[in-house]
Length: 262
Ligand code: NAD
View 1 (tube, rainbow, N blue to C red):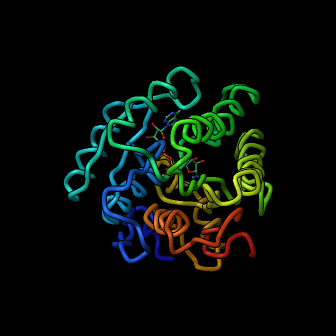
View 2: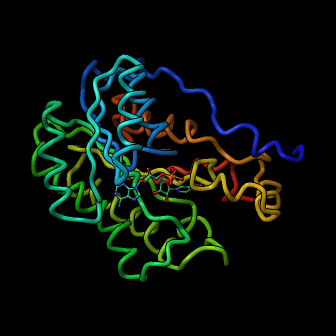
View 3: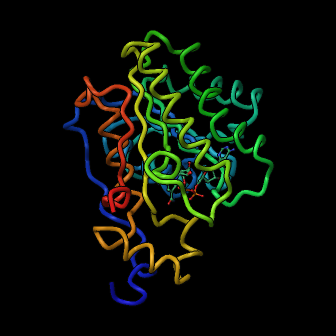
């Protein structure tokens, strides 16, 4: 890989996924949609004809994504919420339902793998939030809920995660995969539940790290020879959400350039 190539390109193409069977105006909630993978997913959903509830801790980032979603011709609402907080999540659901009943959910928000909060607090925020948000959705939208996709990681599932991350991270990402399998069997397809396990993806969270030698060494170990783009995760998420994936339930899909197999 040419030196500096990682730092020059941060985005891949966004595809129109209308052919996957979504009906125009169906509502999706994307948590952590103010940045990175969540933002790319919100924009891919907009291009697929969905209305998007942009949930984020950061009001400014959420509003920026809302404007981009609207710029792509879709309806959007920005909801400022900490998905680690029960009351805030309940309020966020109430605001979201102004868009209409919510058919799809993407649990993407989660703490950085370097978060120095305690192990227990990080688990509450990362995997606890997936349970909290999903339960609130099913309670309010059980008659229309069609599919949920949660963002896990190859860390904790296909590899240990190494020395540069906090121990809660692989633990919580493995828990999200297990919780996804629980949902798939508990609800028997109404809704379907799947998860995506990204490899190393270029987002505002990882961009500050790109100049470190360890990133070049990591990229060299990835069979495809590069890091991934957030849009490449978004495409996988939209497929798993969509009616085209009607018989896919309970899977953890690695999207990592085959890094997990290297
Ligand atoms: P990012 O930092 O670019 O974006 C995360 C967004 O989530 C931010 O807008 C942030 O404000 C929001 N957020 C954080 N905590 C929140 C909370 N408690 N409530 C509501 N919103 C919150 O991060 P990213 O790299 O796009 O990562 C998104 C997800 O993908 C995370 O779950 C992460 O663990 C996972 N992931 C990322 C990578 C990677 O290489 N970037 C790899 C594997 C998994």
